[in-house]
Image (cartoon, rainbow, N blue to C red; front, side):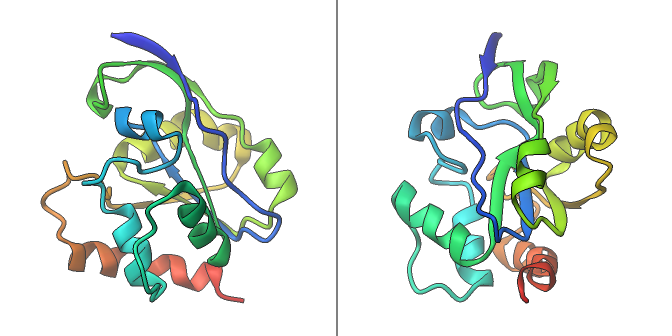
Length: 165
């Protein structure tokens, strides 16, 4: 088990309207230095579907542009923790992220958590700080095989009402 400090800064802009939080970046995301970096994670495919994007973003710049175009901020609930590889179930000794900077600088209307572990961490450690309830969405991780893309799309469609003007 290794203690790791979150290596990816939060992504947000002043006009970000929703904040999507994972738990902690996977090994692949830590290597790629951006969110949802594992090629099997369905997050980017899901965003393309929800926002009728023409192409799947491949680079960090393309992924950031997709988030920016759609008023999405992204980060994770955990600042540092002990973790084995990418396993959420192995997470111990959690230090939560501090969201004050995002909330002060961006027009966040709703917080969403990507999966149960992120929601559990956010509710336990972050909600007392933020006072903002989060809506838990099913994880886009390939480990969440019970949810196919159609089910994920339907469940995640709720974000659309918060990003439109």
